Structure formats: structure tokens, C-alpha cells
Amino acid sequence: MNILVLASEYPYDKDTNADRTKVVGYFAREWVKQGHRVIAIVDSSTFPTMYYTVGDKIKGLVTKTFDVSRTPDRLWTKRFSYNDYGVHVENIPIVKYIPHGRFSQNAIRKQLDEIDAILEENHFAPDVVTGHWVNPQIILVPQIAQKYNAKAAFVFHADYGKENCEKFGVQQYLDQIDHIGFRSQSALNAAKGYLTFKEEPFVAASGIPDAFVEKLTSDSKKSFGDSTRIITAGRLVEYKKIDVALSAAVKVFSNAKYDFVVAGDGPMKEKLQGYVNEVQQQEHIHLLGQIDRNALQHKMHESDVFVLISKHETFGLVYLEAMLQGCIVIASKFGGVDGIIKDGENGFLCEEGNEEKLIRVFNRIKSMTIEEKRTISRNAVETAKRFTEKTVAERYLCQICK
Image 1: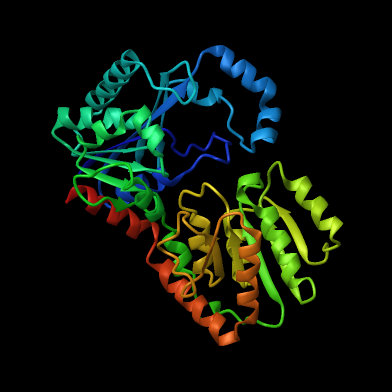
Image 2 (image 1 turned 45 degrees about the vertical axis):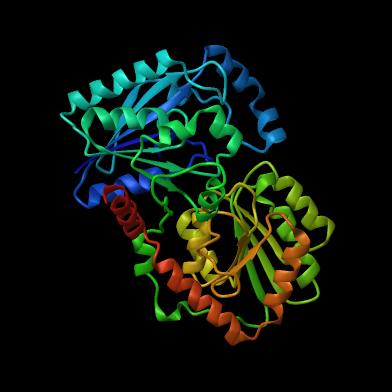
């Protein structure tokens, strides 16, 4: 089968932006492994030169003020192609003049012509056209699919909101697309309040590497001893609410044996270390900085509890990775894994950024027996095993080919 993927972002080894999601690449690579031919088109938003000049000069101010690392990036302003584990990737810049604004009809026509030329050059007639992120993919997908008589699919990466959907005329394009997906159940539920669908949308969840599951052994079972070992991981920015997690942990565990490991880097690192020093918890709270994925797996394996109650979490693959390692996971309610985590059965859900409610969850875990903790841990592992990169890619493709 020939699968054409349209996305605003795609993994590239020369891209150092830590905020860019790699999930579209994971899907595409798995489809290649399954014997399909895949071309990925990256529709990179490009702006006039002054945007990049200004962005370079005030990047530090922007990232510190808004807790983001995204200012206009010159890397994606050039046309280039590369091979990603068998996926043919083409970056095609598409120009617009207002950030978060609509592309002009002329820009859309030009992008369609560029894509057609690539497909012709590669003798590639797509059987399926699937898009990720709204602007401009939701406009391009139905037009390309109609031309090639292909299945059309589209995946929302978050709750796009009623106002934005009206602004970009999303409903009119959805009516031309065969299958609609969402990256989380919570985003899907929210969208039902302002969008209509021809059929029930599906969830395109993230997956963990199959190799991680294969490494699991019988000694993966948690001991849950006298000391509570807590871990969190992610970019140290305000919306991740790691400061809230630290504060709640100190209030619950400071008079008991505990350790809290923070894996990640970012603009809030100095502030977090200052808090640790202020409350004199240097022996218990450890800011590790950025560590690689395998090292993080090892740290999760050594930990009892994983906590991340951030805002704006699309799916949060890190939750699944922690569950696979047997951690009792505390995740954001209405976040990406709400629907996968069942509160009190295979983890806990907490209102995003709410310290008072997180304290209640910590106290609940603290009061549990070892066997109660092990039950949740076992349930978490079994849940995570169902979400490997292979299985989620297969489910996704089955949904859009039915």
C-alpha cells in the first residue's frame, strides 16, 4: 500500500528543537516495517526574513517569558529531502505572513503543485492520504485524496477549540474526509461539543518501542520498601507544573523517607533548584538534567511513583513508559492518557497543576499497603504492553483503511 503522510513536523536528526514531537515519524517507520511504501511531506510554515532576524535576537526573552523554545527556525525554510528508516521525507516550505494565520489560496495551490510533482517523480499514487495538525494539512488532504481516489484521513493533535475551528473552517473540510482521529480520548470528547463527524472518530495513541517490552523480566516487580521513590521527566517549563509536584511531595513526604528525581532541562531549572535549596531538601530532591531515553528507563525502573500533571499534554508517551516500568503513575486529568489510565486501577488522575489535589493523591499512595501498590503496578505494566509502536501503528492503519 502507498501511504502519503502530510504533517507540520517530522523527526530530523539535524533538528535540535526539543519541543518538536516525533510521533508522526514513529507511525511512518512502523508502516514501512509492515511492508508499505511511505512518503512524508513536511509542510513547514515559512515567514519573511525579518521574522527570523527578530527571532534570533529575542529568542532568549521569548523562551523565558512564554516557556517555549519555538521561535522562527531557519532550518525548515529550505526545500530538502532525506530518508528516515525507509520513509521518503520531503520538506516543502509554505509561506505565510501572519503566525497562526491562514495560508493564502495561492500558497495552497503552490503547495499542491509541489506535492504533485514529488508524487509523479517518485511514481507514487497514494492509496491513503493522512494528515496531522490542522493548518494547512486539513485543506490539502481531501484535495489530494480526491485526485488520486485515495482514502482520506486526518488526526487532531489536541483539542483545537471551537473558536479556532470556526476561524479555519474546519467543519467543511471534515465533511470531505473519510476517517478522523485524535491523539487522545479527552481531545476527542471535547471536539464532540463543537464538531460533527460522519463516523465515530478513532484515537491515534503513541506507542512505546517493542524492545522496551521485550526487555521486561520477572525482576521488574517493584519492592515498594520503606522509602518512596518518585520521578518526573520532561522539559522544565512552566506548563509542565514540576514546581507544583515538588511542592506537594515536600509537604507529604518531608517527614518520611523519600527521593524525588527530576529528569530534564529547561528555563525553570534554576528556579526549581532554588526552591530545593530554600526548603533544604537537597538530600532528597535531585535535578539530573537531560538524560537519554535508556537512562530514563533505568531511573523509572528504580522508582515507585511517576508524576506529571502538566497542562497542554497531547498524549504523553512518557506516562506509558513509566507504566511499563511498573511505576504508579499520576497523570493529568483530561490530558492525553485520560482514558488509558483508570483512576485507582492502573494509576491515578489529578487535575492539571492542582497542588491540593496532588497532595491528596500522594497521601493516598502513602497510606496504601505494599500489595495494593503492587496491584496498581501490575495493572500499569499490562496496560502499557498493549501500546507498542507496532500495535498502535497497526490500529491506526486499520482505522483509516476500513
